[in-house]
Amino acid sequence: SLDKRHYGGAYPPRDLEPPPVGANAAACWLVQAWNEGIDADPDWPASNAFGTIGWRRECSNEAKMRAHPVASLLLGSKWSWAGIVPGLEFESWCAVKTPWSAGKWGLQTQSRTCDAQCVQHSFWLEFSGALHSLTLSSDGRALDSTRIGDGEKVALVRQ
Image 1 (cartoon, rainbow, N blue to C red):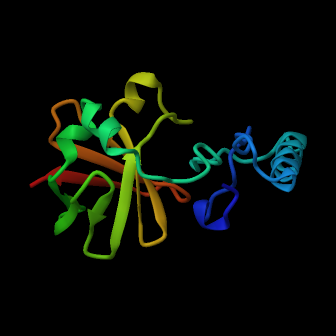
Image 2 (image 1 turned 135 degrees about the horizontal axis):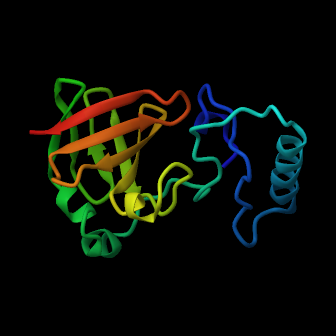
């Protein structure tokens, strides 16, 4: 969405995805106006933000998560967050627990920063009002988190 909380300190990225079918005409106009404005500025900065990809951060359904080869490895797992234990726990197919607040997670279906292979190992995570992009290592023992907005990176280790 174009909600200011999805960007933090980042600019919206170029080529914002249009609203879903059936959205209010005002939303369609607003996204078109943003895209025209961004395109008109040759100095528009690059952004780590997801932009309107997905529009809403809704949890993926349980059947889809169970069928996903990587998501199924995360359920019930616990991770240190930048050395903080307990850090992150994947409690259910949607819910996570952190020392800071409860949150939610889901499949990342596309990315502005990695290819299709990378997306298969990537997830979104939202807690304490911040959105993160998580990527699982090939051996399944580490997660890399990038906070959307300011790009802060944090390493997580499976406990």
